[in-house]
Length: 64
Image (cartoon, rainbow, N blue to C red):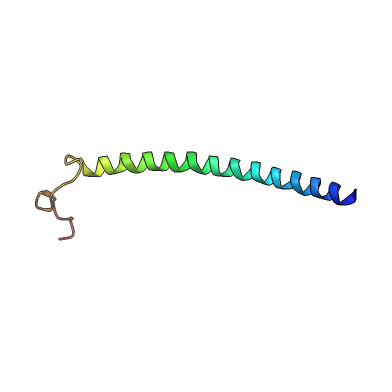
């Protein structure tokens, strides 16, 4: 009988661990999605030609 109780405790502990891990993974997936969206936005901004200046058009710094 003690063995069954110990198995049930172990099973409950593992079920709780599994639920905790699911929550962690779900949170990480949401964060990754947000980061991917930000990377796409930044990539679009950098590839926008109006943001990028040709070196010939750039003035030299005042100490030159």
